[in-house]
Amino acid sequence: MSTLLIEGGHRLEGSVAVEGNKNAALPLLAACMLTSEECVLTNIPRIGDVEVMAKLLINLGVEVEGLGTTTLRIRSKTLSHHHPDPELVGRLRGSVLLLGPLLARLGRAEIASPGGDFPARRSISTHIDALLAMGARRVSRNGYGLEADNGLNPSSIYLYEASVTGTETVLLAAAGIAGTTEIRHAATEPHVVELCEFLIKMGAEISGHGSSLIRITGSSKLSGAEHHLAGDYIDAGSWAVVGAITGSELSIAGAREQDIEVVSAVLQRMGIACETDNGIFTVRPSKPRAGLRITTGLWPGFPSDLVSLVTVLATQADGRTLVHDWMYELRLFALEQLSGMGADLFLTDAHRIIVTGPTKLRGGRVLDSRDLRSGMALIAAGLAADGQTYVTPLETVERGYGHLVDRLQALGAKVSVTKNSR
Image (cartoon, rainbow, N blue to C red; front, side, top):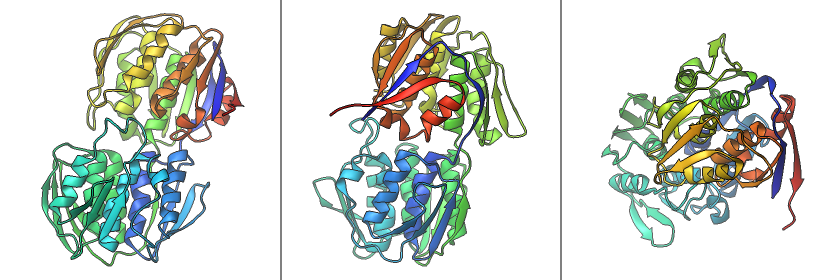
């Protein structure tokens, strides 16, 4: 494990470029298992979660070329078995996306409990129920084992919740079988749309993507395809909020204007000067004001992945802000550590926190990055604080933010890395 040492109190300046959307890269990698032909993915983010997903594919017998670069060539000529490495599965929630392709190709799939952020609180029952509705049956009580000896059946499915990975699980399973499947109460996020676009390139027929009703006609003979990933708006939004917290001027390139709007709307409401011009999202030094109430929502609502960073911004804003993340119980708990840095926080329950600002944050603490998004938020707090702050383990944050230390240093941040003894 590594610790990031931050010397706070310095403004940042410069440009940041973001790579492809992490939340699109994982399902697209899983989709490559649906064909024996070569698939090529470009603008792949060089992050920890993508590396784990690629290793899961390799463990299943898939050939992956270019790991560690932004271009991956994937060849799934044969799949050697149906039970991905439990240790790797335990590190990545996105490993649940392997269920659909394994069932479509092999008729069997068995995975351990997926890991990632808040594994105990993030059920995959929506995913399993949908696959059962398509004709799979349970064959294991340890982990998640499913079997479809006679193949999956095209079905009409209502999702209990508009789960992103739940929707993607059905899309991946339905794309690999003949017939038409309908998904109602489907997720509408940009990365769900991007998966649909890739599956269309592979030969599936899909309509309604981007809406809550998706129809997909699949095939057992999908072809290879190439796809250039859209920029990661969560990565771009994270850097924009870091700039707002530290009173910096930052320019962020690589995210689509229609995606970054969900971030810029909240920043502007909090008095942050920001704009998009020719594909560059710029944040300028501003005097933040309280956001009154900021609530996460399904697309196109404010994303839960940015709620931790906005909470740190609220500590620097004039007035009181209620931050409400109804999606996850544990995300805001990690931010209680800010109280020791001088922040005025009141955690009302598992979903809501009241922040009163502005307060000058103090360093001198070791902060625990319990999930990758709160980890980035704690780094931002350290950048704004007086004195030194330590955030550990750095690897948690690097799951979703590629070349993080290099990018921070390029912007003028005073940061360094130390290795922890085990």
